[in-house]
Length: 327
Ligand SMILES: Nc1ncnc2c1ncn2[C@@H]1O[C@H](COP(=O)(O)OP(=O)(O)O)[C@@H](O)[C@H]1O
Ligand code: SF4
Ligand SMILES: [Mg+2]
Image (tube, rainbow, N blue to C red):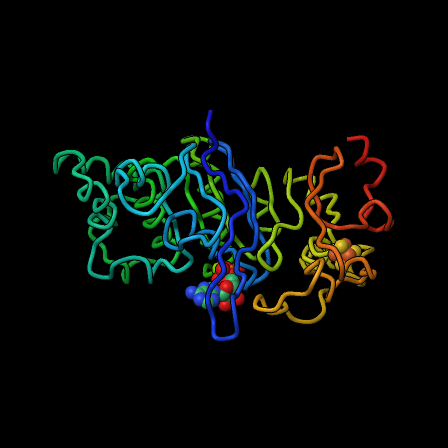
């Protein structure tokens, strides 16, 4: 079976006055049918740019994007087939919902655009989608401003599901919601995934959120993946110092042994002028001269997840713990 999504050496270099800005700089990543892959990294590391390439809103400057086994190219494609391969949900439902459309018309729109069903069949489908995302039928004729933030995000999800896509790209979809509402929306996603078998590319700057929904996690830093693999393995046995710092910054983990030394210092360097060699070296407590010379590639060394760091095997804090090496 084809992957729902395959990115091969994806690059997006934006032209800026200061020179090319390497927002995405060589990402290879796949999402299997029905799988949830979480993409995490601090703001500005290139997550949204990557997401926009997947749904065709940004054109890659290098590499390729394949959906359901076929490479996407601008123009000339079957729009229904395309819409059924991938849909995207954004952070701000207020901004992505048309304020003049009711819940019913918002969710119905993709069906109408693609000429699917009679008026009555579409209404039935809208009501079924609303039920699937936990919206009562009394919300059918409400406008976005008459709904709560959580309800609006559920409308966005129902609209994205209308054409039964194989892949849903979710970009920071709970970041603007209250913590209690976040949990409800995340539960809805995991529920939908098990019922509908949809693949998700789930993007967030918050590793604790990503971990909650993901089968696999990819950690991104300055346009590249620095650690990638099984979700629990990355969470419990992170080996890249950047992932360790992200975990150390999560409040319930902040008192862990290693946390103090691992606090991230300094800002994200400019993607116009990234550091040579390992792009994390300017913030890495373990950096050595080689790190400025040679860029580390992602390697698994036979372990359940891959890391891009020259010294994972040598620096005790980064080395696999014995219980992990045996796993
Ligand atoms: N259209 C654009 N032109 C120039 N730079 C851009 C453009 N879009 C994004 N960027 C830059 O690309 C980098 C990655 O941005 P983005 O993908 O939005 O990151 P994230 O979603 O992880 O916060 C940032 O430095 C951002 O300023
Ligand atoms: S390659 Fe060097 S700078 Fe990069 S993460 Fe590893 S030790 Fe740190
Ligand atoms: Mg973003």
